[in-house]
Length: 465
Image (cartoon, one colour):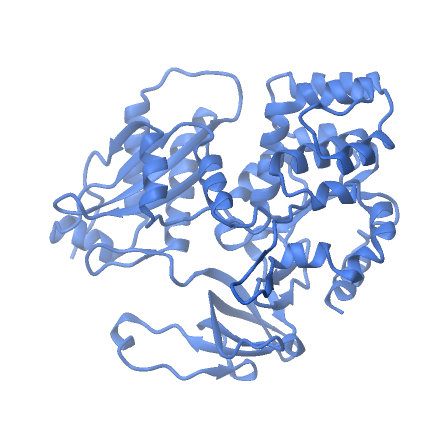
């Protein structure tokens, strides 16, 4: 039912798929069994291996470029390479690029950046790279590929010119929009996708999790920062736990029904599902921002359990993202540099403890400019601290119970290694989200091993009583 509603919504906006295809990057994961012999698999894997999908996969192949075998392949490299190869071979038919999360689209373009010469060679000769050993993938691609030297020349020219701004439009000239979840922890990827696509609309259509489907964005072509979701009440029983202020946090909060939420207030969503979850706290914090008829509409604020804290201050995921974005805009973008990825850590091994931000940086052009990296990153440290709230500034400046913020710049590809580590431990590629606050010793070891430089805030942030 939900998929039909979303399809109707896109058709109503004039962006149906009748005139073209979707290049959708999908990755399933291996299934496993519990000790009792019960099969376990991720929701994405469950859908793409379901009888419902398999019985209609012929219809899928007419609207999507990726062969079914590439979706069912659990090897991330082979799956990504084959989906991208199919999407490049049929690039003039692509009107939409899609992934579950904005991170997935970002990773696909970075994969193209690393492997475009190999992909172009396959397209030129109509062959499949020897590294693709999955026989089903090879069979599916070999029936689709024919030597296309002109297409290969175009790909080499656009990807090899050293300018990646607008690469999506240049490779897929008929693309009308991108589709992926771009709210919450995915919002840092919005600027880089706008850079790659030269401003193509980025649609965040659905709000869902492994626990259940929640709702949809009734205004899909709004700006990513304006996305709101309307909860569909018959998908589960939804209740809401009010987010309390620090002075009232010791008083137990009572659950609020969907019909009783109040404008402007923030809540943690709680679900009771048809599959058996009872009053399950999903961990997402939502804010009521409007109403559609009488149905409340919510903006995703952050994950409720992701905070940095050393003393009495509490820095949320949303606070951290805004601070990093402010530093990037003020000090990095003017020097043709962007934040490719970031995470954070509350380091209490020092006296006093301090915040550590791990940054992976990327150049937006091949042009270089003379500037002091130590000075520039130091200014980023200060800009981040200036963006934090008054409580942080008080304990940092007046109480001095928090030390200067530190930025550690890591090697390119470090966050890919974090994802590889998570996947090797059972995480789903399609549902992976980079951690915004690291607490795992294993992840910290990967990050610290990749540090190329460390920088501290040159002075305390401004504060007054």
